[in-house]
Image (cartoon, rainbow, N blue to C red; front, side):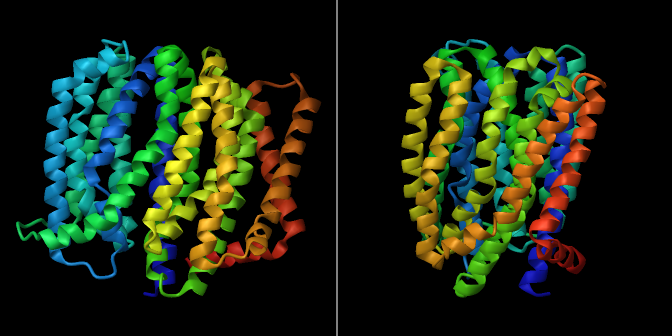
Amino acid sequence: MSLKQKAIKGVIWSAIESWGNRVISVSIFFLLARLLDPESFGLAALAGVFIDFVQIFIDQGFSQAIIQRENLEAEHLNSAFWINIGIGITLTILTLTFADLIANGFSQPALTPIIRWLSLGFLLSSFSKVQEAILQRKLNFKALASRSLFASVISGLVGVTMAFMGWGVWSLVTKILVFGTIKTILVWWVSEWRPTFKVSFAHFKDIFSFGINILGWRIFNFSTRRSDDFLIGYFLGTTALGYYNVAYRLLLMITELLMRVSQKVAIPTFSRLQTEPEKLRNAFYQVTQLTSLVSFPVFLGMAALAPQLILLTLGEGWNQSIPIMQILAFVGILHSVANFNDSVLFAMGKPSWSLRLKIVSAIVICTGFFIAVRYGIVAIAAAYVISNYLLYPISMLLVHKVIKLDFIKYLYRFKASFFATVFMVLSILGFQYIIGDSISLLLSFTLSILFAMLIYLSSIYLIQPSLIRHVWKLAHKS
């Protein structure tokens, strides 16, 4: 099977996993949001700031090194596995010991038991990182998809059941732990690789030299993604954080639904093309264009229909999340295509470049958050969007350096999706104005989505009919 065929099949199975997971996750999320209050979500989000930060150090960037390396030996895998286990055990013990101190730092004593239980996830992650990396390296996303879906279903059912029974924030905690446990067990079951004690310092040093840049990238990426949660929780309280976190999580779910499908396949595929820059450049053009065809209408459509979406799915108690969702939708558009820039830099063996960019991004975005927090959660969302658009040209210049990107050709790829989306949004707003309150909210929302899809597809066909035929051919080949 050719690399192209493997990549296409990888996209399909990654889509099954990501879309299946997101459909399940979104459904569970909406149920939990109706059963729990903003404070419960805020507490879970605040604990998640610390847990997600520590989680970064489990892998040390070894997974990306395993995926990227052209020549991979048993000692690379064994060294990565045992280091991960040691770090997982150490971080779990430290978190259990200092949970009180961490909770007091947030002035939230209720966080102590939440943080302690969630720290068990460090051990679960350390046992599965290498196996997952091997499967991704082989583009064997089919093996990962069904296991991840099963874990999502079971953990979601557990979480919702506990929420119905009145367990509050603990329904969210248990859901996370059950998901991690099931997924780890199933990944070991499907993976043929088993660790041995055949390790080597030279091999560890080999993957560490690559992985340390990935680790640094993840640390600064975390600061750009979660420092807003920290500042809101610290200065504005857990209820405000609950409103903000719900809107942000909806954005994140949709972003991952659209982006992870192709991005998970992009790094191993780009890595195989690192000695063929022309093919890599064309692959980059194509994947960003195809992603924009879906992401542009979804995010701007979400912004236009946010009031109805929130009222229908979460209820009036979450109205304060509406403007946040509308603002963050604009950064979703950018992330859906810009995140492939890092995939190119990783694949071309330039993680240090991506790290430096992430350091600059962290400084700019965190400064924006710190200035905006005094003005409330809507201002923080706006600061995040503005900062990301200011940083985007720098990222494109780095990509240009490694694959000699033609900017005009690159931007031209977004012509059809951009103009069709603008026309679609204007049509939605006009349609909403005409029908007003004459029909039910659910019927209005449903008709608006169907009308938007019709307008968008018709516009794409009128602007660039060859693009429809190209997508059809790709789907037929898969």
